[in-house]
Length: 254
Image (tube, rainbow, N blue to C red; front, side, top):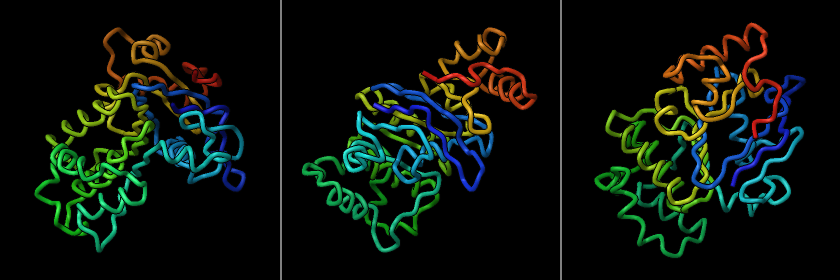
Protein backbone atom coordinates (compact mmCIF):
# COMPACT_ATOMS: atom_id res chain seq x y z
CA UNK A 1 0.00 0.00 0.00
CA UNK A 2 2.82 2.39 0.92
CA UNK A 3 6.24 2.10 -0.67
CA UNK A 4 9.31 4.31 -0.30
CA UNK A 5 12.32 3.47 -2.45
CA UNK A 6 15.68 5.22 -2.01
CA UNK A 7 14.01 8.48 -1.05
CA UNK A 8 16.20 11.51 -0.36
CA UNK A 9 15.30 15.14 0.29
CA UNK A 10 17.75 18.04 0.22
CA UNK A 11 17.09 21.66 1.24
CA UNK A 12 19.69 24.23 0.14
CA UNK A 13 22.49 21.72 0.44
CA UNK A 14 21.19 20.14 3.68
CA UNK A 15 20.17 16.50 3.30
CA UNK A 16 17.08 16.05 5.49
CA UNK A 17 16.43 12.44 4.42
CA UNK A 18 19.02 10.10 2.96
CA UNK A 19 18.40 7.05 0.80
CA UNK A 20 15.37 5.82 2.77
CA UNK A 21 13.44 2.69 1.76
CA UNK A 22 10.58 0.88 3.46
CA UNK A 23 7.14 -0.59 2.80
CA UNK A 24 3.88 -0.73 4.76
CA UNK A 25 1.39 -3.39 3.74
CA UNK A 26 -2.37 -3.57 4.12
CA UNK A 27 -3.32 -4.02 7.76
CA UNK A 28 0.05 -2.88 9.09
CA UNK A 29 0.69 0.05 11.40
CA UNK A 30 4.20 1.48 11.16
CA UNK A 31 5.54 3.61 13.99
CA UNK A 32 7.84 6.34 12.67
CA UNK A 33 10.08 7.59 15.48
CA UNK A 34 13.23 9.62 15.89
CA UNK A 35 14.67 12.73 17.51
CA UNK A 36 13.58 16.19 16.41
CA UNK A 37 14.95 16.89 12.94
CA UNK A 38 15.31 13.20 12.07
CA UNK A 39 13.21 13.52 8.89
CA UNK A 40 9.88 12.11 10.07
CA UNK A 41 7.60 14.95 8.97
CA UNK A 42 9.63 15.46 5.80
CA UNK A 43 8.97 11.83 4.89
CA UNK A 44 5.23 12.06 5.63
CA UNK A 45 4.87 15.28 3.64
CA UNK A 46 6.64 13.69 0.70
CA UNK A 47 4.32 10.68 0.82
CA UNK A 48 1.36 13.08 0.91
CA UNK A 49 2.61 14.77 -2.26
CA UNK A 50 3.36 18.07 -0.52
CA UNK A 51 7.15 17.94 -0.81
CA UNK A 52 8.69 16.67 -4.05
CA UNK A 53 11.53 14.22 -3.47
CA UNK A 54 15.03 15.21 -4.48
CA UNK A 55 15.52 11.61 -5.57
CA UNK A 56 13.82 8.24 -5.17
CA UNK A 57 10.29 7.00 -5.64
CA UNK A 58 7.27 7.06 -3.33
CA UNK A 59 4.07 5.13 -4.03
CA UNK A 60 0.59 4.92 -2.55
CA UNK A 61 -1.41 1.91 -3.70
CA UNK A 62 0.99 1.37 -6.59
CA UNK A 63 0.72 4.98 -7.83
CA UNK A 64 3.72 7.28 -7.86
CA UNK A 65 2.99 10.35 -5.73
CA UNK A 66 4.74 12.59 -8.29
CA UNK A 67 3.84 11.09 -11.67
CA UNK A 68 0.37 9.82 -10.66
CA UNK A 69 -0.41 12.39 -7.99
CA UNK A 70 -4.20 12.44 -8.35
CA UNK A 71 -4.58 8.66 -8.22
CA UNK A 72 -2.18 8.43 -5.26
CA UNK A 73 -3.94 11.18 -3.28
CA UNK A 74 -7.34 9.58 -3.83
CA UNK A 75 -6.11 6.66 -1.79
CA UNK A 76 -4.44 8.46 1.09
CA UNK A 77 -5.31 10.67 4.02
CA UNK A 78 -2.70 12.85 5.72
CA UNK A 79 -3.29 14.51 9.10
CA UNK A 80 -0.50 16.94 10.06
CA UNK A 81 0.63 17.55 13.62
CA UNK A 82 -1.23 20.88 13.76
CA UNK A 83 -4.79 20.89 12.37
CA UNK A 84 -5.95 23.90 10.37
CA UNK A 85 -9.77 23.78 10.26
CA UNK A 86 -11.87 26.36 8.44
CA UNK A 87 -12.93 29.18 10.77
CA UNK A 88 -16.44 29.54 9.36
CA UNK A 89 -17.44 25.87 9.20
CA UNK A 90 -19.01 23.75 11.90
CA UNK A 91 -17.87 20.23 12.67
CA UNK A 92 -20.59 18.71 10.49
CA UNK A 93 -19.93 21.20 7.69
CA UNK A 94 -16.28 20.09 7.64
CA UNK A 95 -17.43 16.54 7.02
CA UNK A 96 -19.88 17.64 4.33
CA UNK A 97 -17.20 19.71 2.62
CA UNK A 98 -14.85 16.71 2.67
CA UNK A 99 -17.60 14.52 1.23
CA UNK A 100 -18.21 16.98 -1.62
CA UNK A 101 -14.50 17.45 -2.34
CA UNK A 102 -13.90 13.70 -2.58
CA UNK A 103 -17.31 12.82 -4.08
CA UNK A 104 -18.28 10.43 -1.29
CA UNK A 105 -21.78 9.35 -2.25
CA UNK A 106 -22.77 7.59 0.98
CA UNK A 107 -21.25 10.19 3.33
CA UNK A 108 -24.54 10.95 5.08
CA UNK A 109 -24.75 7.34 6.22
CA UNK A 110 -21.30 7.60 7.80
CA UNK A 111 -21.60 10.91 9.65
CA UNK A 112 -23.36 9.79 12.82
CA UNK A 113 -21.20 6.73 13.42
CA UNK A 114 -17.97 8.62 12.80
CA UNK A 115 -18.97 11.53 15.05
CA UNK A 116 -19.91 9.10 17.82
CA UNK A 117 -16.69 7.10 17.43
CA UNK A 118 -14.57 10.24 17.89
CA UNK A 119 -16.81 11.82 20.55
CA UNK A 120 -17.83 14.72 18.34
CA UNK A 121 -21.60 14.21 18.32
CA UNK A 122 -22.29 16.97 20.83
CA UNK A 123 -19.97 19.30 18.92
CA UNK A 124 -21.44 18.77 15.44
CA UNK A 125 -23.00 22.25 15.23
CA UNK A 126 -20.07 24.13 16.77
CA UNK A 127 -17.67 26.24 14.74
CA UNK A 128 -14.17 24.78 14.53
CA UNK A 129 -12.36 27.72 16.26
CA UNK A 130 -14.48 27.17 19.39
CA UNK A 131 -13.17 23.61 19.78
CA UNK A 132 -10.32 22.66 22.09
CA UNK A 133 -6.98 21.61 20.58
CA UNK A 134 -7.84 17.96 21.15
CA UNK A 135 -11.27 18.30 19.55
CA UNK A 136 -9.74 20.01 16.51
CA UNK A 137 -7.39 17.06 16.23
CA UNK A 138 -10.34 14.68 16.33
CA UNK A 139 -12.11 16.73 13.66
CA UNK A 140 -9.11 16.54 11.33
CA UNK A 141 -8.92 12.78 11.83
CA UNK A 142 -12.69 12.41 11.31
CA UNK A 143 -12.38 14.15 7.93
CA UNK A 144 -9.53 11.78 7.04
CA UNK A 145 -11.40 8.65 8.14
CA UNK A 146 -14.60 9.68 6.32
CA UNK A 147 -13.03 8.72 3.02
CA UNK A 148 -12.01 5.19 4.08
CA UNK A 149 -8.50 5.71 2.67
CA UNK A 150 -6.26 2.76 1.95
CA UNK A 151 -3.22 4.64 3.28
CA UNK A 152 -3.33 6.82 6.41
CA UNK A 153 -0.49 9.13 7.47
CA UNK A 154 -0.78 10.54 11.00
CA UNK A 155 1.72 13.04 12.44
CA UNK A 156 1.42 13.21 16.25
CA UNK A 157 -2.26 12.17 16.23
CA UNK A 158 -2.74 12.29 20.02
CA UNK A 159 -1.75 15.91 20.65
CA UNK A 160 -4.21 17.57 23.00
CA UNK A 161 -6.18 14.43 23.82
CA UNK A 162 -7.09 13.36 27.35
CA UNK A 163 -6.44 9.76 28.52
CA UNK A 164 -9.84 8.50 27.32
CA UNK A 165 -9.37 10.29 24.01
CA UNK A 166 -5.95 8.68 23.61
CA UNK A 167 -7.39 5.22 24.23
CA UNK A 168 -10.31 5.80 21.86
CA UNK A 169 -8.06 7.21 19.13
CA UNK A 170 -5.69 4.28 19.45
CA UNK A 171 -8.63 1.91 19.03
CA UNK A 172 -9.96 3.89 16.04
CA UNK A 173 -6.59 3.70 14.30
CA UNK A 174 -6.36 -0.02 14.98
CA UNK A 175 -9.83 -0.59 13.51
CA UNK A 176 -8.79 1.08 10.22
CA UNK A 177 -5.81 -1.24 9.98
CA UNK A 178 -8.02 -4.24 10.70
CA UNK A 179 -10.16 -3.18 7.74
CA UNK A 180 -7.11 -3.24 5.48
CA UNK A 181 -5.61 0.24 5.61
CA UNK A 182 -1.85 0.75 5.71
CA UNK A 183 -1.08 3.23 8.49
CA UNK A 184 1.97 5.29 9.46
CA UNK A 185 1.95 6.94 12.88
CA UNK A 186 4.73 9.42 13.61
CA UNK A 187 4.95 10.18 17.31
CA UNK A 188 7.28 11.04 20.17
CA UNK A 189 4.96 9.07 22.45
CA UNK A 190 6.93 5.85 22.40
CA UNK A 191 4.48 4.05 24.66
CA UNK A 192 1.75 4.64 22.07
CA UNK A 193 3.97 3.32 19.29
CA UNK A 194 4.89 0.26 21.34
CA UNK A 195 1.25 -0.60 22.10
CA UNK A 196 -0.21 0.23 18.68
CA UNK A 197 2.28 -0.45 15.92
CA UNK A 198 3.16 -3.74 14.25
CA UNK A 199 6.58 -2.47 13.16
CA UNK A 200 8.84 0.46 13.99
CA UNK A 201 11.15 2.58 11.82
CA UNK A 202 13.72 4.64 13.72
CA UNK A 203 15.22 7.62 11.91
CA UNK A 204 18.33 9.52 12.96
CA UNK A 205 19.58 12.50 10.97
CA UNK A 206 17.60 11.42 7.95
CA UNK A 207 18.77 7.82 7.92
CA UNK A 208 17.13 4.55 8.89
CA UNK A 209 18.94 3.16 11.92
CA UNK A 210 16.43 0.42 12.81
CA UNK A 211 13.42 -1.19 11.16
CA UNK A 212 11.29 -4.16 12.18
CA UNK A 213 9.12 -5.47 14.97
CA UNK A 214 10.01 -4.42 18.50
CA UNK A 215 11.49 -7.87 19.05
CA UNK A 216 13.64 -7.57 15.93
CA UNK A 217 15.03 -4.14 16.73
CA UNK A 218 15.49 -5.14 20.37
CA UNK A 219 17.65 -8.04 19.22
CA UNK A 220 19.55 -5.90 16.72
CA UNK A 221 20.31 -3.38 19.46
CA UNK A 222 21.39 -6.22 21.78
CA UNK A 223 18.88 -4.94 24.32
CA UNK A 224 17.65 -7.13 27.13
CA UNK A 225 14.59 -9.30 26.61
CA UNK A 226 11.58 -7.27 27.67
CA UNK A 227 13.28 -3.90 27.11
CA UNK A 228 10.74 -1.20 26.32
CA UNK A 229 10.71 0.70 23.04
CA UNK A 230 11.96 3.74 24.93
CA UNK A 231 15.00 1.82 26.17
CA UNK A 232 15.66 0.38 22.72
CA UNK A 233 15.17 3.78 21.08
CA UNK A 234 17.79 5.46 23.26
CA UNK A 235 20.23 2.60 22.81
CA UNK A 236 19.94 2.84 19.02
CA UNK A 237 19.98 6.63 18.71
CA UNK A 238 22.79 7.03 21.24
CA UNK A 239 24.88 4.56 19.24
CA UNK A 240 24.08 6.41 16.03
CA UNK A 241 25.00 9.70 17.66
CA UNK A 242 28.37 8.27 18.61
CA UNK A 243 28.92 7.27 15.01
CA UNK A 244 28.76 3.57 15.70
CA UNK A 245 27.18 1.08 13.34
CA UNK A 246 23.65 0.90 14.74
CA UNK A 247 21.03 -1.65 13.80
CA UNK A 248 20.06 -1.30 10.16
CA UNK A 249 22.11 1.84 9.47
CA UNK A 250 22.81 2.34 5.80
CA UNK A 251 20.55 -0.54 4.80
CA UNK A 252 17.22 -0.48 3.05
CA UNK A 253 14.36 -0.89 5.51
CA UNK A 254 12.51 -3.55 3.55
